[in-house]
Picture 1 (cartoon, rainbow, N blue to C red):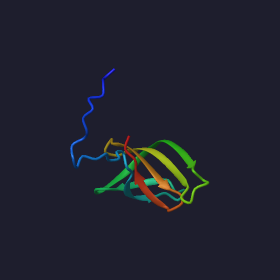
Picture 2 (tube, rainbow, N blue to C red):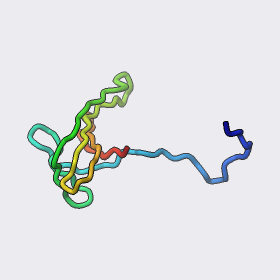
Picture 3 (cartoon, one colour):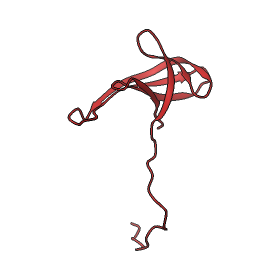
Picture 4 (cartoon, rainbow, N blue to C red):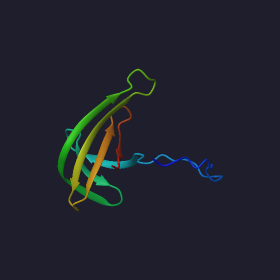
Length: 95
């Protein structure tokens, strides 16, 4: 176990959130799934590898309702993207 040194953080050093969702422009299929990701440039979705939905904190003033997709792009890149079902906007979620 590492002992607490008792030192304080340097002035101006603060905590920051990581893994924040990034807004993303997505072309949708007729069923609402992602067809093309536009950031930067255009990349077609070659496969949807997984899909899941999260509905949480429904009792709050800003509940969470998201439909996630694990997608494979034509470039070979894998992304996790989701559609905010309340706002109707798409985001990229790193992991």
